[in-house]
Image 1 (cartoon, rainbow, N blue to C red):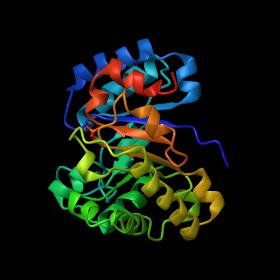
Image 2: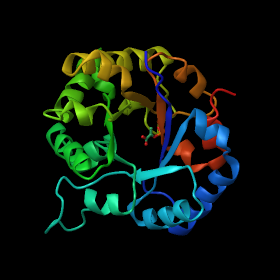
Image 3: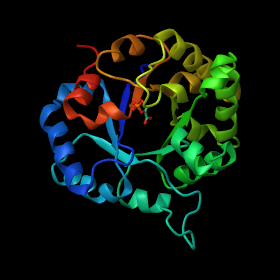
Image 4: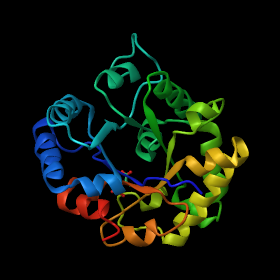
Length: 257
Ligand code: PEP
């Protein structure tokens, strides 16, 4: 099995303005040490309006923290008012971009087809998508979480070549666990993350599946992260609420302590 470096990514959602973003990243940078970055990749996904400030800080101080956006347009440029292109994010040296977060699927009607177009747009500009998938409560109650989530993976990766798919990050985020304080059990997380890896092996190859990082997301905190990270197919976390508290986020990054 390949050694997958865990990725802890903070999704700030629509929180922290550009000044607060600077203070927050400075606090993270001040607290995190080289040994933290060696063991775990650390990333933040601020709102679009913060990205330039974060870039300036990261570039200027040569910080090891990575950053990215929470969404991108499926198009590269043109008359798409309010949208932000992958080219613009690449110009700001973003590493990551979230695609298909459940809040985008729920409030903005994003479909698997659109997620597929966004994944391809991300790769056109050298960005690494963090593809978010996961079932709602009704699906979970019916016991269909694996089939539902795998269908989202299939849809979003349709016609994505292996040379790209081998770098994708997939975040399994059961919708009922996002922002609710209702964390999935480690076994729940493993069930679906393991199924995602097996599906990647079928869609591409076992070697590719072995390389891809699969995160869990949904009410991750310092107190529950270690048990989730102990699961063999969980390679990190996408963290919402708890990522807004720099001390808590650092504790999550240091999940082995
Ligand atoms: C998220 O925003 O992706 C998320 C998992 O949020 P929270 O950690 O607050 O549940």
